[in-house]
Length: 173
Image 1: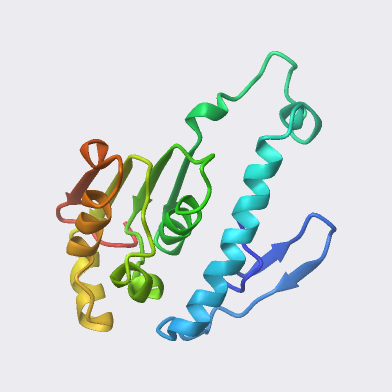
Image 2: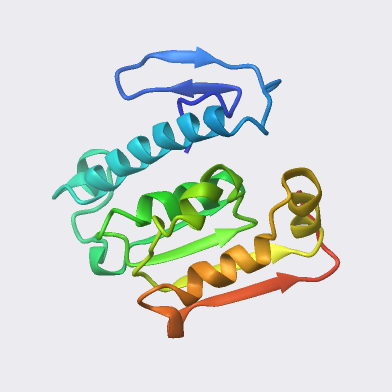
């Protein structure tokens, strides 16, 4: 998704509102990041609402009437801030049945994680590139691997959770 939070170069809303953004923002300011995260969650929730609307595939995507989605298997996935967005959205949206995160950037919700406010009930799969976790540790003083491990272990679906490290890779690979 091209979110309307300033994290991409151009965004366009359903109503046609278009905006160009600057990518020169400070990514370490937690309040700014949390505001962006809230915007993303709202947009992702609207997308899920659209997906769950009968006939959406045919009306919005012009697919054949035989094409259907099994909404009982709705998976959210994302990379970096998108991985965080999926976690944050799945925390309160029971329509989400599984979470996939690739180098999920958890720093903006570190306080919520510490306070036990993020409790996923869905199975989770998190993949971390070998070079990403040390960068998060260095710049944000956060042990990303332990945070993800705790997120999985505290989940109601802990036995279905998985945390994997991709060796010899980094965030942009």
